Image (cartoon, rainbow, N blue to C red; front, top):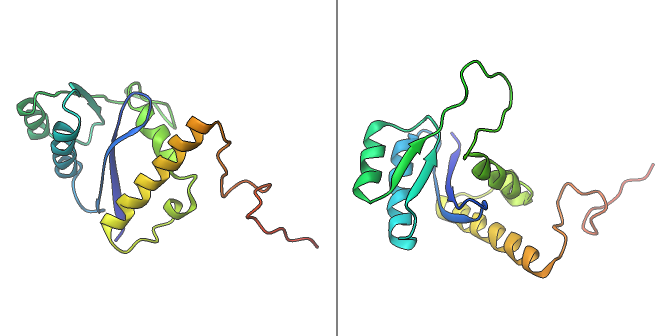
Length: 151
């Protein structure tokens, strides 16, 4: 049950590629497809940092595409949340995506629709940054779309 959202971002946290799969799909399989997308759509990408869930054949696949792949591990003995160097940009992007209510829950029935919603959320984020508008969050109680309950 469930979905897994795999993304590749640049160092600013802007989306380069997205793939939504079943939750049971291994990171290496989803990552292989994502690397293929990035190699075609963004040929200037030469370095990728990933977490420890990826296997050796994934590194070899990246090398065949001309991409230097580095696995970034958590520091041994670390407890609780600590930002992992080089990977915090992706985690921050996931946080930005969760500000969009439709992505905070898994409403979509098809993976390609979920991917489209992620693209729409990133388009909204980039447009708001370019225009200087504040990002309206579904969590914001002052948002005009929120109804207030008074007692």
